[in-house]
Image 1 (cartoon, rainbow, N blue to C red):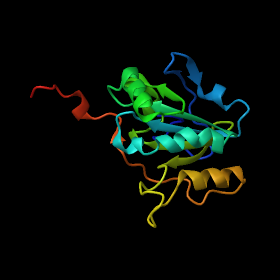
Image 2: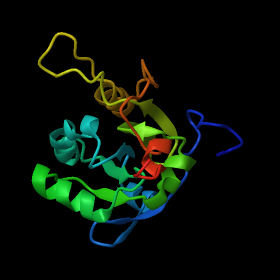
Image 3: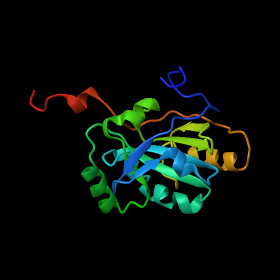
Image 4: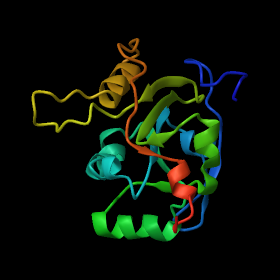
Length: 183
C-alpha cells in the first residue's frame, strides 16, 4: 500500500521507480519528468490483445505532447524482453518501453490489467487514472476518449471532467499464468 491507501489519491505523488528499457539502460520516472509539465505512464503488454491497437497512438504521443513524458511499462507475468522486442519489431512500435519483471511497479501502483494509464504533473501528483478510451474505434459514433481529454484539460489548467475511468484489458497477474502446464 502506498501512503497507507489501497490506491493512490488524486493530487498526491505517485511512487517513483527505476526500470530498464529494452537496451538495458535504467530509466526513472523522476528523471523522465525533468523539464516536462508532466508524464503519462501506461501499463502495457506486448502480449495483450487490447494493447495492440494503441501502438500507433503511443508512437505519436511525444510529437503530439512534447511537454509530457511517456513511459510504457511491461509488467505482465512471464513477459520477457524477447517478447517485447518481438512486438516492437513486428508492430513497428516507436515509444519507450520499460520492463517490470515480476510486476513490482504494477503492484505498487495497484494496477491489475493492461492497458491502464496514469497522468501526473511534474511533481508526480496524480491527475488522471484509468482507460485510454472506451475501446471503440475512433471513426465510430460510439468512441469516447478518456486520456486525451484529460491531457487537454490538464495542460489548459482546467479541472478534469473525468479524473478516473474503469480500466479493462488483460490481467497482469493471474493464477492461470502460473498453473502447471500439464494438468
